[in-house]
Image (tube, one colour):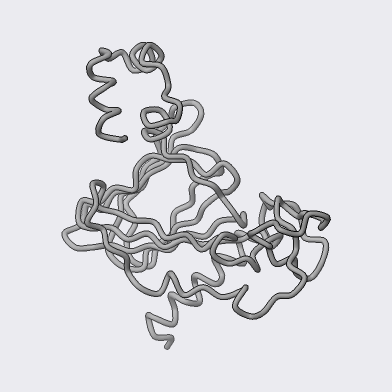
Length: 220
């Protein structure tokens, strides 16, 4: 009998392998490794996916401990996402995979957002989450998922999660991209620089300029 903790590790590893070997979002790698030179200071180097390959690399370029511990959720939304992508793990460059840890306080919301470059598989470590995505035909797909369960979010579609349980919740996400990207809908529209004109937001959301300014002030 496999202990629950070890079982979850195995499931997460299979999750990564599955999403990597399915429909690939990033181009296939052409060499063993291309550890990202995040400083891009090698001007003449060939760049793979926007990054030059480091001339010298070490095991630390493939290591990240940032998902090991819970992160504080005492913010407005009551949630926090910790990414483990190429910006934290340079060795992920050209490998087409990344992960994230999601921590939720009770009632915490991971606000509506998209990942432009990746599909996502979400695995609940503990607690329970209500999850949703919206299709381009404006169909809302929803599900409650609990410890040990998985839900999938298709690439590019708006999705979000909320912890409606009585205690905190934690999930691990796997992506089929080294750098999935994230665009928060509300922040993109109401906190862009330079700002989206009030006339556009007022007409799109059918609200007054005063209401637009009120939302902007909260998201600034």
